[in-house]
Length: 561
Image 1: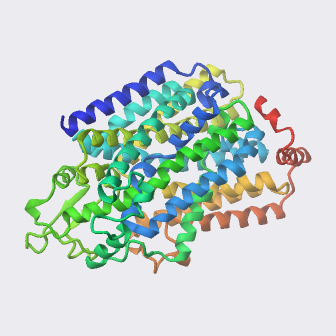
Image 2: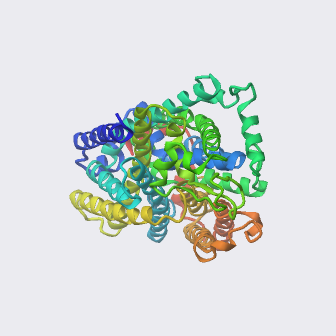
Image 3: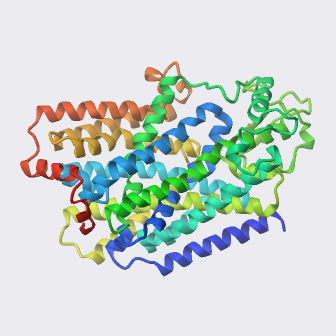
């Protein structure tokens, strides 16, 4: 069977599975809609968290960035993995004990202010919409290649699917759907990685294959370094970014993780604090399988791509190039009309452009793997994008229905709240679709912006809310607004207003828009501290509550929340 047939079969079966689970586990109450009734097992929650965590950025885009950036791409591996550990081990147990499963809810109660709650809602909406735009873009890319439709149509199809199971099932439907999605995406990621590792190095373990030797006896990374240098590029294993920018991006991704609302909710879907910690451990193992394989996929992919296209006759290019040219995500332009593809770092002489987001999806075709493997990767890419998109849409609907409407209309019935949650999720799908069609960058870049916004707005307020009894509502509001506005303004300026100025020479302190969240976070901390010192301290009952949260004993009582 051809690729298209296999894709239709495997994607169709996976969609049928997701929709079937959504119908079977549909939410009948707000508790089921928001936290899946709090009765999910730690193992299932660990899988669901991993699927939620490994978005289109992890599955589709991360290996692509590493493939084209080499050493510099390690910031995403370090930042996202470190961030998850920071969230799971440092923040989640305290937030779980506090008993508030949304960041705006935590902010509103901790800072005894509905104004602070509303500011936090707007921050959560900004972050979630930025993040979900990247996921919808990933959905569009997968559909455009494998179902042979344009990216816009692909986004519309993805919107329909996400709308169905996120709006119907809520967190209950999403959780069990994500367990299935994790199984699909990890199988889809590992199978081609194992095949290509055997093909290139003879080693079935991709992580070891990355450090193995190719057919001529030379090490794969040494060979890749040599090929890139011969073409005029820097060595694959050498870095090009400044250490300041690497540090800033890594830290922004780390602490941004800790403020991401859709992951925090996960720790409330299990019965007890102990189960929350256990599910965090399971999730880390499940995440590590993909994250340790991504560098291998990246190196294998770029090695095979260059080997099959660079310095080859234009009219004799392999089939995979022709397949992806239809999506406009790869272009070949014989500038000098010599009939040979020149791949160079100089834009004026370069004749080959490969979109970073296609490297994982195209890897099986580049390596000439069986058609069913190609179809499997398509299903995996869809699973990764849809799982995170659904989690983010739930955050958006929860922020609107619970943190806004419930706050100002407390007498509202549960049925009304559920309707508002579902309507707001529907509107969120439409807006997310628009940004998926008109994204501000490639998938992982857009996601990095979301993490930067989370770092600059939420992280200082959460940290100081837990570990400082002196932190008050005035400091929290001022810090969140300052951090978000500064970071957003910096990103908008360099990405939309003056994109031609987006170079190291023009960046503040040599920090790129992807890493500016670190500086925004520092400004947030300073503003929080100064404003809190200049204004009255929190009420005594709030200070006592903070002391209680920080004391581990009695944490077992948190399951009543």
